[in-house]
Amino acid sequence: MFVDIRGYTSLVEQMDPAEVAIRLNRFYDIATNAIFRHDGTLDKLVGDEVMAFFGAPLHWRDHARRAVTTAMEIMREVAAMPEHDRLQVGIGISTGEAFVGNVGGKDFTDYTVLGDTVNVAARLQGAAAPSEILLTQDSFDPVARQFPKATRRELELKGKTEPVVAWEIARE
Image 1 (spheres, rainbow, N blue to C red):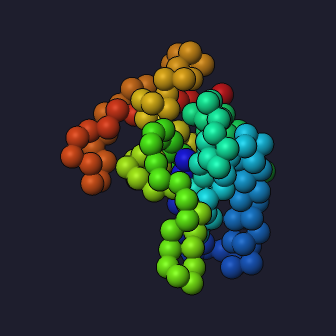
Image 2 (cartoon, helix red, strand yellow):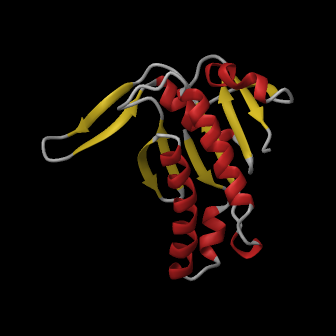
């Protein structure tokens, strides 16, 4: 799962750096608390982006549902922020096989996930409009009954040779 603030560069350009840090920390609190509530693993905080995964190091059979529930909570809580602090985010979720473990050099390693499914999640997040959650088919299937009004889309994602089927789910 990738979560990214929309319009962040323009926002930062207009704000005092200390205020940027305060607002970014509020966003990080919302996202990380939701991730931890659903037993996700926080991978990275990079600028205005949060990367997380579900199903490792502990395996959860319902990892896709946990990721989607987390995404919905993040959207709800961001929308509930006071108007002067409100942010808009886009979220991408992909389910599939991935390498999970330490990568890096001899002096530094990072516990992370790698693989096509991770790249697809990042690309979906990039394609998501403000306040939009995009899921791959494998992520959508376990939660499809919860979202009868989901919209199916075929997206051309950078680096992919074939279009990717994505489902846009609406905020509750």
